[in-house]
Image (cartoon, rainbow, N blue to C red):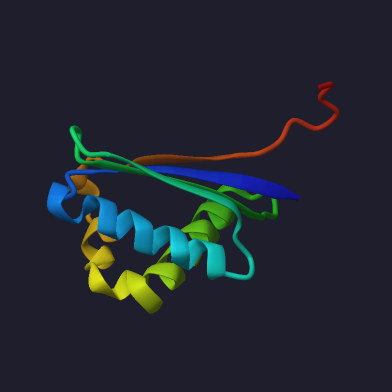
Length: 109
């Protein structure tokens, strides 16, 4: 089963927003278990939107932890090291919101 992580990070410094988003996208594209990543930035709002699919179990708590581990793995290597992601991924006071969505079983397109 696949699920989709959608995460909105706000409060990012605008001078790093595009560079950080580009590095994150490169990292997500290079990760073997991340499917269809999308990273976009809103310079005026200082927000970075991250979305990707991943293999899930159907256990929401375990899947959220797994998705965040994937995101941390991506931010710990390569070009993403140029930006201190740990602060933005760990600090709950930064206006971070997100969700994990599962496909509807038996849905008709």
